[in-house]
Length: 171
Image 1 (spheres, one colour):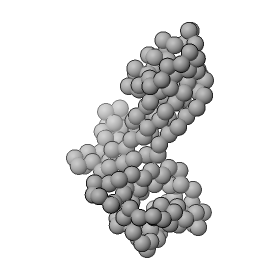
Image 2 (image 1 turned 45 degrees about the vertical axis):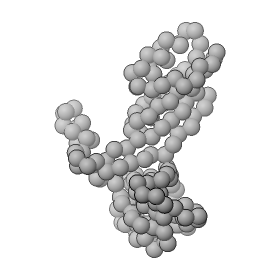
Image 3 (image 1 turned 120 degrees about the horizontal axis):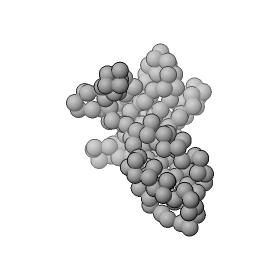
Image 4 (image 1 turned 90 degrees about the horizontal axis):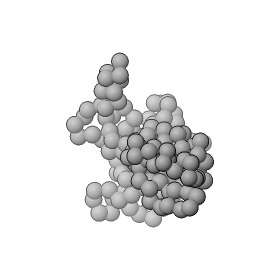
């Protein structure tokens, strides 16, 4: 199962290296890793997406707490949260498909951030499902390049599980 871990760390040299080393020593592949400043000066939030069962994730959490500079570790997998990702995507365009691509861009609320004679660079922000969906749809036009951030995630203050709401509405 895919797990999303949110780790608050002191912003010190070598912290990210120690975290990634911990995963590497245990032969865990990190699917996504993002790091950025948190709400307090000198503190960073590391968001890690990794596969494993609950027992393995619990063990990884314990091991993370043993590292210096680790302040808090949370498994956000089953906690109502807001998840976002950013993707820049260069797609091949021509006179025949230009309008169709622009329609898709509008439907997904993406942005065209660069226009070339034979390509567009698009900026897409959203949950990982939206990112995957637009990538899949635009594949037929020819994707020249992709750059993606990792997932970032914060717990919902409302505690509302939107995934649960989606499943109720769609039943």
